[in-house]
Length: 482
Image (cartoon, rainbow, N blue to C red; front, side, top):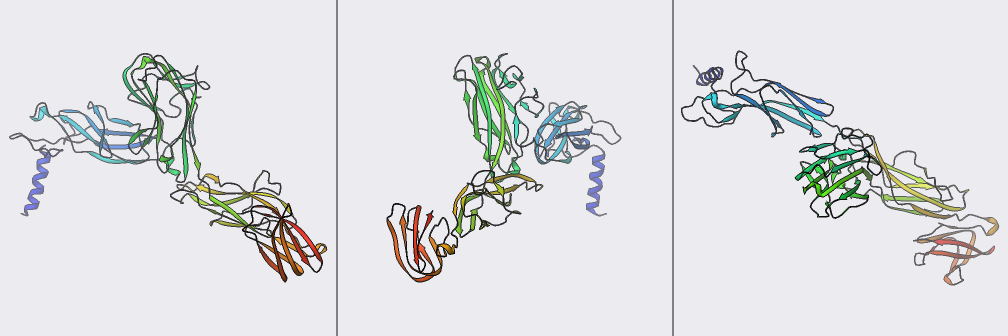
């Protein structure tokens, strides 16, 4: 008979007889018979209200009997021990720390090996599973917690290792109610974390995120031994953002902290209280917790003016990835330069430039522009925010063809580098003067009908341009803006 077939039959008979290699790969003690440590059966996982719910059944020997020595179960999440559950009859587990994404679970059975000939020793079976849960639950964005619901459960606040002296106090706050860590009853050498639910920082890839809150301390000792530390969670670690100590009672103080490090990630925020003797304080109060994103707008907005043609340009927002920017819009006031701004683009612009044409019926005025970028949620394409650039101010005066005034037009207005002069009849000379009459430029035009005047060396301001042609001498007011 084939030796490999013989080996397979031998292993099958050995397993059915209850003899097997230990689950953890340990060598059996000399002379000891090693029995199968049967795993749990029928492991299942369900997402219930954004928590993980695991169930299984007791291990079974051939014939259906429960193995001897069964003392409990070990629940593993992504290969790391999550919880030991004592007792053979507890066949479920709630994972209240279900993280966004996909989590993989296994469960082993734990045995007291006394009945297997190894008193005082314990062993684990092979794992049941794996089973997976995919989860994308999180609190709404932006996140605001004024404690108006009067409960920690409304926004799924949790505590580690226990709630301790944290309460929602309806008689205090800014305004009431507030979350309160009370100094009494006294707790010694404590360290308690109040942690919020998951935040969808993952969808923001081009934004600044801010964490704001109000706090107040009513102190008893001013000893600096009791602490309140706002924290945030990223990957697998809680990080401190600042440390507040009991150096004396305070009124309500507002804090605003840059939390942009969570851009592109799921995260959490929380408050850790710790100290040597909680009765050193009457209490810490925390109110009006606010986490919000401010998307980054287009940068370097600029314009050039050519007659009535306004050529706008800008650059992409200052962020590492442009995957969230779907396009750009342009907004403008009317000639008064006063709000409201109206969107003048019919659809999102994919580039970094746009040309606006001011109606020739408008001879002068002040227009204001800004450009926005349209940030989308990369997961579903919905709008996250529309962020604006700095505002551009255009002081506009249109050079017009006026036959009654020599048929002369001068543009653009304002001018940055050059003025263009156009005349119905040849121009003999031209000059540029300050409003005080100082000669800045004086030239022959050589009887040209159209020519340029370089003004890039002139300081910004208002000037008078004098043109002499066959119809006479004419003066126009112009502005120079670099």
